[in-house]
Length: 91
Image (cartoon, rainbow, N blue to C red):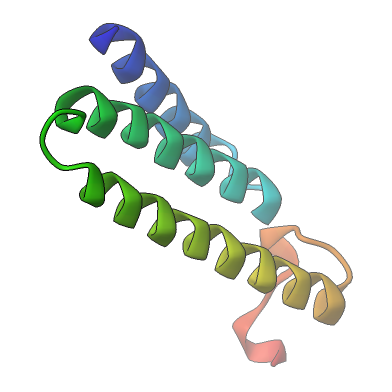
């Protein structure tokens, strides 16, 4: 089970590092990393600290909502979610 979680985390990190074209792909890979870390925390902390898992889930949901808000704002202002078309100087 531990090896599968490590494989999940490394594959999510691989996608995050290599496929940086679209912001939506980055957000999906970040959420995949969050879920794999949650499984790892659940594996080790299920008997001791369930409140830590609850706080972790709350902050990960807030992170996902913030990422989607940024994605919607970028799509409205630039027309697409490609990171290469976004320039800091255009704002």
